[in-house]
Image 1 (cartoon, rainbow, N blue to C red):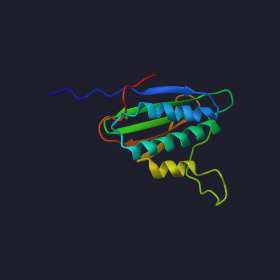
Image 2 (cartoon, rainbow, N blue to C red):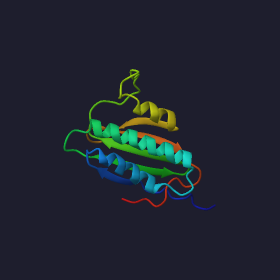
Image 3 (cartoon, rainbow, N blue to C red):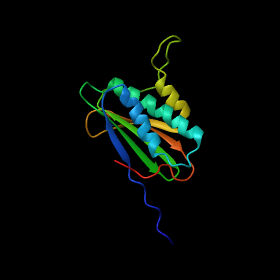
Image 4 (spheres, helix red, strand yellow):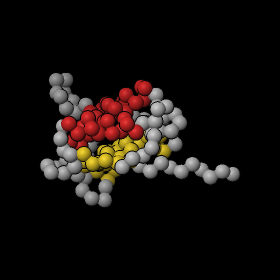
Length: 142
C-alpha cells in the first residue's frame, strides 16, 4: 500500500498594522492558490481574507503585526489570521446604516466553516476553511 501523501507545510507571513497590508495579505493568500481552485471559491477566499485581515488590523494593538497562515490539507484550505488583540470575535447584528459588524457575517456565509482558536501568546487566531477540489494550494512559501 502506498504511503499517504505528505501534508503541505503551512505558508505564513507577518503583516504590519496598516490598511494597505490588508490587500497584501489577500494577494499573499491568492498567490498560493493552486491553479485548479474554482473561480467562485477563489473569490470567496479573497473576500474572507480581506474581512479577517481587516478585523485583525482593527483589533491588533498599535506597534504589533498580524500573521496570516495558509494550511492546505487534501481538499480543504484553511486560512488563519492571528492577532494580539483581546476579545473573542462573534457574529453581530449590525444596524441598517452602520458600517461595521458585517465582516464575520460574510465569512460565515462564504466559508465552509470558520471559528476562533486560542494562541500560546496573547490574542487569538480566526480561521476560515474552504472545500477545494484537488490540491488546495501550490507550493508553500514562507
